[in-house]
Structures are given as structure tokens and as C-alpha cells.
Length: 296
Length: 65
Image (cartoon, rainbow over all chains, first blue to last red; front, side, top):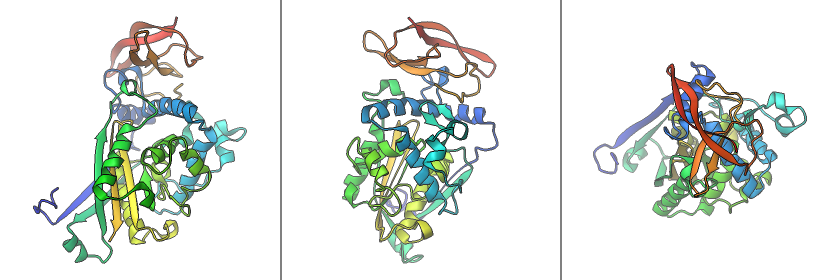
């Protein structure tokens, strides 16, 4: 708005979070304050507990198995190995995550979610320089155009949602971004989505129109969401393995898509990527922002 | 079934769920059981939920009916 109004021709947007200096139970409590202050937080709700409630219902409704959740972790850890800015440089295997004896390597945090279904506690920062096109072209031959943006909200408490297996704010924000850009989900070449919990990557891939309801797990297991697949998701490693410094996560997603569209993503580069998409959400899906990007 | 609980919660593991009342209203809360089952019959009680800044926070929780 600052730029499109003509007030400024260049704006620096930055986000950062330092979370690793406090004990886990304190960080967990602080992050939990995003839950409903009257009906969820007093009972001890944490983001993983809300994720677990969502996962239990979603997995039951769409016959999603623990191995599907583990496949998200395996894929995103593998992508993070190719990202010099990722928090985790550690491959994991399905055997380690869900095989016999996996309980010690991958213990339950909030059933049915295990440790490797969670994004980590992260220190991190990200920044983007926004500019009008003329100004951008005076600095680079490869600017990335923000073609569409959408924001939407949902009930804060899970108990107040018509269907707690839906991520309505994500769906509506994506629809707004597609409408503004004139770009359809099938045209997107690469996307970063909010996989704070592995189950969310599968559910969000359906809410943003990449796959039909219940078919996100099939796309995942068929390799369609891998870097060399037809619809690469979370090439950075996602929140799961790149890390989730809350105040920087949305910008880190935008940064990854910018690099992808500029051809600067090195080993994780998606071939011929020209249109990208990000969706980030706050609370447990109570608000979401989607953005569509295009290579100039 | 929550195995990593936030500061101020004394129960471990902590069982949380969404409970549906006879009139269709839904309420999130702690469930006092080691063996939660979808569809199990519960009834509400009032008492201590957690401690925050040294003070007890009271509210509704649920026990098997």
C-alpha cells in the first residue's frame, strides 16, 4: 500500500524471532497464548494439542495414515539438506520415524502427532525489499512480481468452527489471491505452505486447490510434491525443517519463492519455475495470508 | 493425549478434547481419564485447571459420566 499509493518507491520488510533461549515448557506456554484465551489456553491447550485434535479428525475422515505424515517429514528434511539457511541438516527415513522401535527416536508429543511431525523451536530472520517495478528494474534484471494477495480469518477456537477438519481461512485467502492475480492453482509451479505440523501440509495442499479433498496424501506418496515433481511444495524444507521462527516464517516463505523464481535456489531449484505461491497462517488457522508471485 | 505440557500444567499426560453437549453446544477442555475414547460419555465439573504467575486458574473440565 505504501508503494502502490506512491508514497514510497522502496520498502524493506523484515521479520525475526529468537525462541531458543527459554526452556521448552516456557516457549510452549508463550506460543500457546495464540489459542483462545478463555476456552483453550486455561485448559492447557498448546499448538501441538490443537494440531493433534485436527489431525485425529482429519486422518479419520480422509483415511490418512501415520506413514503419510512421516512422508512429509522425510521429504522436507531432504529438501532442507539442500538449503544452506535451514535449521536442520539431517535426513530422516520412514523406518526411523514409524518403524519398529521408533518410539524412542520419534516419541509422541500429542497423539497422533510425534516429535518429527512438529516444526522446531527456532531462532531466525528474513527480509524482503519491495519496490515499484521501475525502481526494481534499476537494481535487478530479475524482479519478482507480487500478482495477488489474500487474507482471511476463521473462528479462533476450534470448538466454534463448523467443520474442524477444514482450514477455512487458508482456503478463502488463497481464493482471494488467485482472484486478484488471475492465476489458477494448476498454473503454480512451486509453493511454500505452513507445515507447522506435517498433517497441515497435506490438508493445506487441498485447501489451496492443488488437489481434491482427500487426495493430498496420494500426491505426496506419488512424489508429486517433491522438488522434481509436478507440484513441488516446501522446497526450503518448510517450517518442519527450515525452521519456524514465528515472526520471520511468512517472509522466509516469500524469500524462498523469490529465489526459486529468480533461479537462485541452487540444488533445490525447481526447473523453469515462473509462478509461485505462499500461504502462512496464524493461531491454529484462525487467520491466513496467501500470495501469488510471478517471474518478471 | 499431550505428553509435552506447557508451564503451569501439573497433569501428565494431559488429555484434551472437544466435548459436545446434548443441545449441540461444544466445549474444549481437559478430560480426566487415561483412556480417552471418541464418543465416550462425560460430565462437567469445576475446579483447578492450571497455575499461572503463581495463581490458580479455575474452570470447567470433564470426567467420565
